[in-house]
Length: 71
Image (spheres, rainbow, N blue to C red):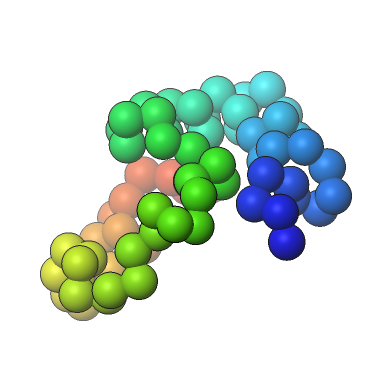
């Protein structure tokens, strides 16, 4: 599957409505404007130990106490 295309249409962010696209652009600003849908597979890391440590309270804080557009 082509990483540039989602659902057979252009890049992911081009299919978003205006407010969702703005939120997407704000989110990728936090990761140096790296669009994960355009990241070549050769640059992916496959080592799970390269990830930051994650604990139960981290998941709870994110899911329950995190700010979301849906809360």
